[in-house]
Image 1 (cartoon, rainbow, N blue to C red):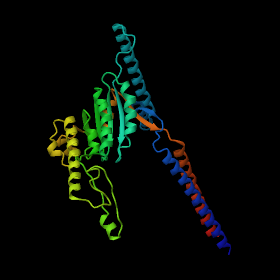
Image 2 (image 1 turned 30 degrees about the vertical axis):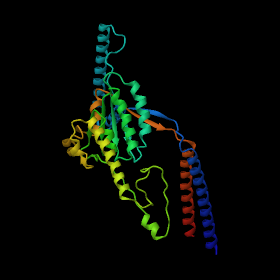
Image 3 (image 1 turned 60 degrees about the vertical axis):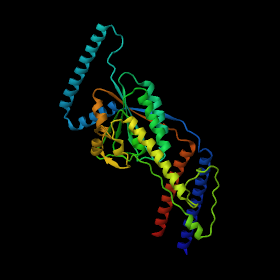
Image 4 (image 1 turned 45 degrees about the horizontal axis):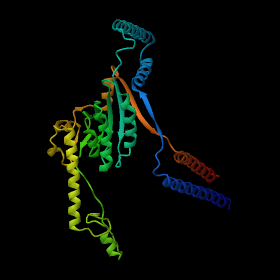
Length: 354
């Protein structure tokens, strides 16, 4: 009898918790729909990669190098720094310059991780807007692109953001470590130089559209579907209506037009590419992509950055969205729910052992 009472109490607590969760989730969804179009503010985060890797190197050196050797190395570095500073001062004095002449070139590193809607375009826009006014002399930009492609208009806008860099005459390198296909390659081809890892996937210069059709299922169940349009080609294919050969022909025609625009865009940005050969929708791995002219060099983004650390100042730039109160509440609720379920489960486990 006591066991039944304890079990009933446990079940009541669980049901109460589930009801509370449903109420919270419903409230969050409702508020989310109300403010769906709202753009939340954020901020730019900048990380000095020279400093980051210097600190990592110092940490390793302290572990793998004995004290006397490490001390001697520090003295040599300190002496070299003093000598360089003295020479720079003498040089400035001789030329009459008040400020140091040899400002190191800068490499700004951005990253784009694409989904089907190219949602990261907003972040990319903010990052480019922040960096472009800071460009001086021979500064360059590196954008790491990872995307299997997606919506035509979304990736068209993402590529246009990268064109802001090349239009400003700033050297742009795109690095592909995993995949830049379809819309991802549309972005990559804008660059002055494309580098990719040996097994990165590139290409897929084609257009895809697919949709199911439930017309026969509706007919079988005696369900009527009506689609009213104004304009002969307002809708060519539908999911629920009966599709016609004329509608299919128009749909394919629109796909071909989009493919033609895609090919022209790639050709304009990489004129040496044999577009007829590569615009078949196929993909190529890094080495084969190099042979086809889709990329310029086999190189990972990490290697590219490492090659610049000695003589350049390298900065990683990220735009971080400010979480609104709904998102913060959601994370807090998620943590509280997880803890509550854990406590209830532990209580049930303890009682079942009595």
